[in-house]
Amino acid sequence: MSQSKHHHHAQPYSLADYGWDEACDHAFAPYRDAGLVPARIVRAERSSCEAVTDAGISHAEIPGGADQAPPTTGDWAVLSPATTSRGPVLHAVLERRTALVRSTASRTSQGQVLAANVDTVAVTVSLTAPLKHGRTERMLALAWESGARPVVVLTKADRCADPQQAAAEVSEVAPGADVLVTSAVTGEGLDTLTAVLDGTIVLLGPSGAGKSTLGNQLLGEDRLTTGAVRDVDGKGRHTTAWRELVPLPGGGVLLDTPGLRAIGLHDAQDGLEQTFAEIELLARDCRFADCGHLGEPGCAVLAAIEAGEVPQRRLDSYHRLLRENAYAASRTDARLRAGREATKKDITQHLRATYRFRDRQR
Ligand SMILES: Nc1nc2c(ncn2[C@@H]2O[C@H](COP(=O)(O)OP(=O)(O)OP(=O)(O)O)[C@@H](O)[C@H]2O)c(=O)[nH]1
Ligand SMILES: [Zn+2]
Image (cartoon, rainbow, N blue to C red):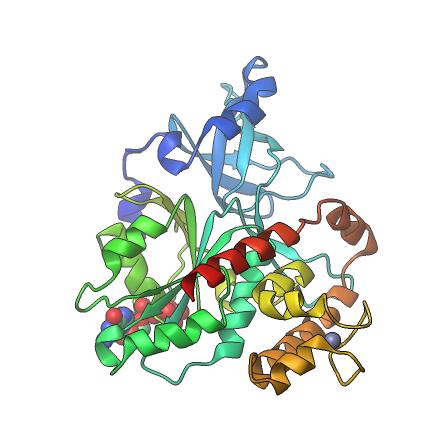
């Protein structure tokens, strides 16, 4: 699909279609009296951004010299209105509810926020290849860490002999997350998926997992380039006028930004603890509060593995992802970490809810 067609498309949506709600209304109140304009960032660059307002999509300037963090796709923003001599200018970014952060390659890494205010992260896993749980666990940790709700979406069920068995297996590595079986070919599970996805949605997953195909199903059109199409035209998927935030016909908003496809763990300690909730719960019974579950006496985790209650693979995967995370976190600016500590979520409640849920399933 040609991008110019979308570029000149009349704005058919209101800000509510992009997820504006009462909480936004409340956060924006102080700016309203000043005559400023509410907006959501649909694409951001260094010195300018595209933002949707009730009057349509505007190209807004980002003033230089400001020490505020740069806006990112999904941010709720405050624009100063255009004047006869100047277009709209970004005035402020409202506090983020959730953020997907990527560790960057630089030595003084602060992490880069790739997407803001995401409500649901769909972790896509193809059923055509052997399941790689470590990859799923990494994506779940990212999702939990962001503050969004993860949902595991198994794709291509039409090419799998026993999708329900696969779903049962994946559920074991995804405590607290729904696991859905879908097929874009037969349409299986797509109604359930639409019902489960809520608010601003991101599709995470490896190349070929079927993210574009799913996105197109949700959009009801071929807005996203799928592997098959890309093979034909050989072009990159993201053009300059590509909007990374698109309202879905059934409600909700799809957020699709290029960097998300290669996101790595960044300071995701909380997210990892939630991803490995059953291990964290057992760890409360280890003799030492700082038990590393590596052979210490009185280790409740190793005892559970011994008893066959937790697979060794889960603990190995946890250790590997913790190491990966520690490496990324060691490069995180101390100032940023201090700020994050202050907002650290209490995972206890989540763990309890998870276990109540799992106990009921038994
Ligand atoms: N049989 C079958 N094939 C599917 C299904 N969903 C997607 N595919 C195929 O899987 C291939 C990859 O799908 P994409 O949607 O391009 O995957 P992606 O995750 O967007 O991949 P990247 O863009 O590389 O990140 C394509 O050839 C799709 O036609 C499905 O439900 N069943
Ligand atoms: Zn232990």
